[in-house]
Image 1 (cartoon, rainbow, N blue to C red):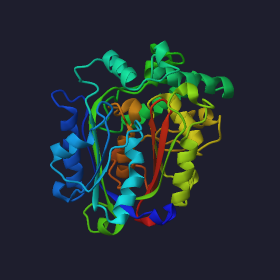
Image 2: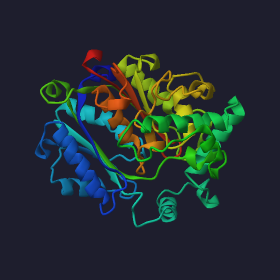
Image 3: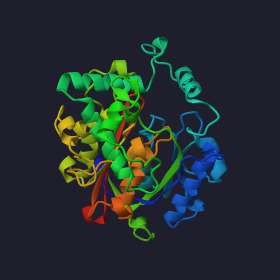
Amino acid sequence: MNLSSLRGSAAIVGVATFGCGEAPGFSEMELLARSAHAAVTDAGLKMSDIDGLCTASVGSTMWSMPVVEYLGIRPTFIDSTMVGGSSFIAHLLPAMHALQSGQCNAVLVCYGSTQRTSTFGRREIAQARRWMDPQPYETPYEPFNPPSAYALAASRHMHQYGTTRRDLAEVAVAARRWAQLNPEAFVRDPLSIDDVLAARMVSDPLSVRDCCLVTDGGGAYVLVRAERAKDLPRPPVYVLGNGTAVWNRQISAMPDLTVTAATQSGREAYAMAGLGAKDMDVVQLYDAFTINTLLFLEDLGFCKKGEAGAFVRDGGIAPGGRLPVNTNGGGLSCVHPGMYGIFALIEAVRQLRGECGARQVAGAQTAIAHGNGGTLSSQSTAVLGTAATL
């Protein structure tokens, strides 16, 4: 068996979110469970049909065990690999292998976080992360991470390619314009280039408007074999390709601050799918910071290295632009509860099912969903398609 033989062998048949934005009174497990049950129902299945589980958590190294207990399932396949925000896209390929081998028949991928309404403040969370995930060449200096790590990448891109703060602002404004078309987006107020440029600086050159939201939220999706998907109520969205790559943990260990492991994960996903960037109708990128979108547009082949600033200018990725990017509003304006990857995938599925209302991309048949973890540390790319792409 090679990866090309897995192309289209599994389909996402149910998706759901719950509590995105502010969800006071809910625990992370409750948000996860609400979205999980809704995704299973969306798939036309029952929780008793679920025999595969993929999940991950920032705060718990054994997270899959209480999730199994809380949901009341007894899976024959479990993957709790944690590679940051890309985890829930990286879970696709192991789940596809498990389905094709017959190890399981229906895989639930799920996540929940109360990062916004948690009793712990952001400072305490940051301190806990430094304790749980020490980085020997950075932690002793107590950087304001993750913003300062991404600011370093942004500064290098600006120095090397002439990218400007206005180019970064274009990314934030485009995300907000998409969010204004999405009733589920957490922030929908008008946002201009000047608003972004005048916003409070967080870590030069990134202002607060260059940084993602801090929200609560749960998300889930269900994956089954392609032949079974045809008998379920929702239009199947097929996994055509998936790739994951990790080159570093610390930002200071990147060989080149302007080139990420998305070059590898994207290449692998495209090869498996037999498609390329030019074939993608919809693009969902992990935009924890505005520089992410520029880097991933380049590394995934939508423009040449150093040209993303020009690519996004004048609304290039906004509604009506040359390429629909982050059509739900992304992590910058829609939702970002600690790890965003699963929400990028859910939006891609909804676009291919034609369920996005005012923000729907007409005739969308293919989509890319890309996840990022850590400080440009892990990258995972998924290429999805409708039945017409098989």
